[in-house]
Length: 133
Image (cartoon, rainbow, N blue to C red; front, side):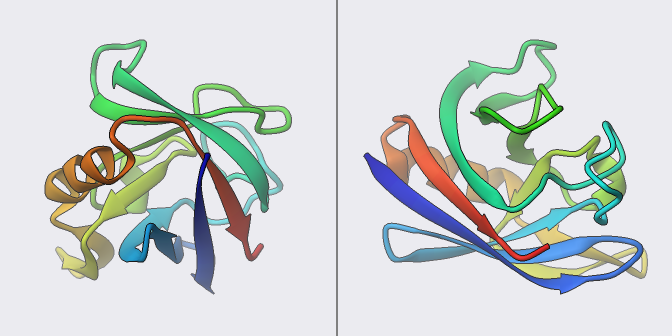
């Protein structure tokens, strides 16, 4: 099974930034800050998780996403398109590179990046190891 790594390298009270590596390709991520794994407001804990491809999220809002399975005390965690940490309720937002939007830290080219992830994985499940607090 495919293996991916999310290496968190910037953590502060507003957001968590990371590098997502799979099949030799590097992407950028932005998540909420660490707030003790509180639902809807915190990034998820470091660990190893199974990620399953979903053609559409349960709400129907997101298409071509990955559902992060087995997050302690949490459910509905996705890897999906989005730019700013505030666009997430605890999910991992995925982009091609880091940048700024409206003066706020962001990931950019998010829709393109999530499409590239689906092509790289051939829409198959993979394991994600999250490193960093």
